[in-house]
Length: 147
Image (cartoon, rainbow, N blue to C red; front, top):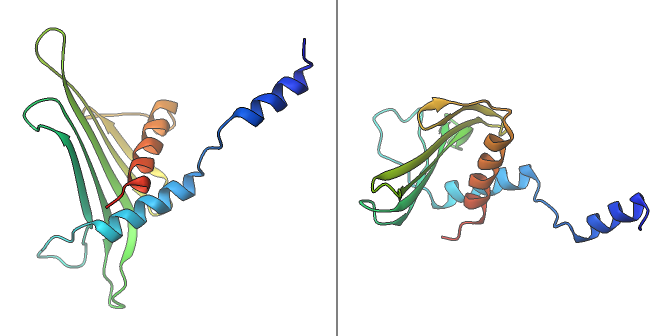
């Protein structure tokens, strides 16, 4: 039997390194600012960049993702980011013949700290490991997205 330290070192060798949260956060921001659309809004003080991805048929089984910034163009002319909003939704057929839906909505401040999370229209705990894992999954999707 291997001593505990050898087991620990062995698991460290085979474990894949996780990307740092800051890298995912910066990558998601970079994607939405580079590829997102600026809507024509009557209030130019608060302008969101927005990007949407849809996989599947909107009237059948599908997934959708939306990322948008919370920010503005101050007098300096450079975009000032105040946070991000991410939405994830999935619709799939149930065994009973209807539809199952799973929807997440995340709002984070400019440092990447979660401010509010809703799942299926209900507020969920910000510290819940499932919440953090889903937030990281969505950031990873946008950080790795190719135009």
